[in-house]
Length: 300
Image 1: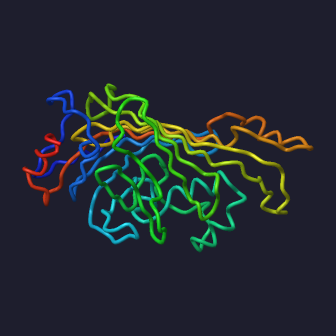
Image 2: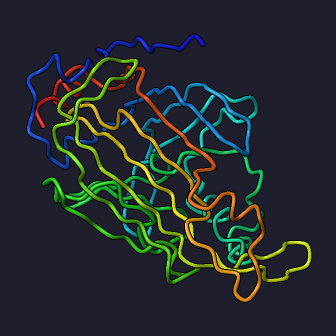
Image 3: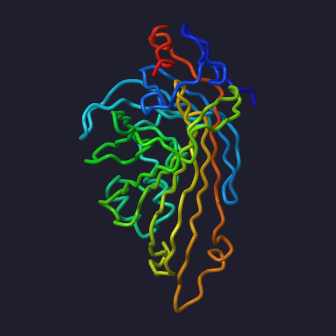
């Protein structure tokens, strides 16, 4: 596949190894000037869905008011036919929750006004679009009509081993949590755009909680299960997110007492059904961003 490389008035941000290595800070780990764009190779590998490799893009453009204040709009799009559109205000977490927690589907449909089985959109969860807010203590996401942050990418605790926990969708369930861990602060990461170091690797686990598995045709309760999405994102000072890998494991634990669980659940116990990855192929500032803005990214 031929990948596009963006060339604009401002310079391409080159691999961190070619620059003086700045000390990681929360602000520098995700530059957020309006117009900044990240392009990735996107690989989807699945044992239940078609596999594909394409390209994907994240970019900042515009602002919006949320319950938490003014947020930037972080757009996300990929190049699959009929799906290469910006998905800035959708909620990939709810799409994942739809798959992981069948018992919550009526509540999700009531909140969104639609089912989420085949909605075109942005599929990666650990890097996703929406309403982006960065302050001195964290980088979080907001979504329309939610009165609280819906995701945490980073906090200002950047020492190796530091952790954070974010309760997700409390309006829908009380047992869905995001757990983040600073796994490394000096990683070396090879991407199509070059090799970057030092990179900060944040590990993420989304615990979807125990939920009832429902037969959608009969609404019979078949049993209970607990699943997770696991993975990591690498961030580089002055560049931003350069690489992501995530696995969706819908059946980490199952319980069908006093009956036997369906064989499919047993076969998939502890198995990743879908692996998604994003690997940087280019970072640019579009023409409305000045050269001084681009240079300032290296001085954070």
